Length: 262
Figure (cartoon, helix red, strand yellow):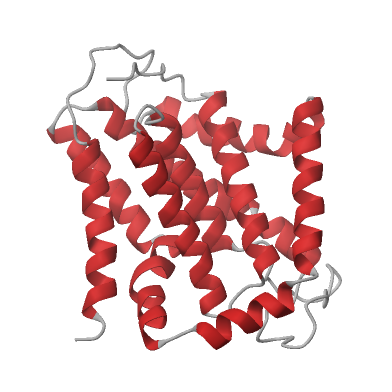
């Protein structure tokens, strides 16, 4: 029975987002059909290309933003041990259950991909192309960001808190068999990527934007509660997920027009 509340909260979040987004379309047309078609699957290749070459095309503001993230994550890393100790002292059976049955599963994709399925199903039933667009972009962003974080994880090979409980600066590097994969946090990257897709499409609805990023933030905090990542890993994951989702959404390699705000 003590597991019911966090499970109920997670289900409520999942269904409330679906019900809110299931709305009539505004009548705007698209350049291609919002469905699983050749344009959509081709965009996986073009989006991957754009993610890889993006750093070579940064403008001044983007370079400053990226540098700021690196500096901020380095600064946070000096407090990683204290932050870890704080979360481990503060954890309770309730926060453990909330993580296990709620927000960890959102970051892992169990709930978030179920939500995307509901978005697509609802968009099909209610003929709402915005819902279907969010679903397909959400799935694509989840898969691409999940693949993208493998490379920095392999190159850095940072020890997780359980693997190095007294030293947050243990890095094995790429010459070691892939055993250490703490940075960045994959759950947080995925959570913020999906939140950013939803927030970008429904930016005219501030409550939905807040809800999306709140769920993503709690998903990241669940990794600290579970002692799976350092705080700097979570911060980098949030920044990575946001940046990649913005790139995918704004590049629009799928060819779908922006829908008008209702």
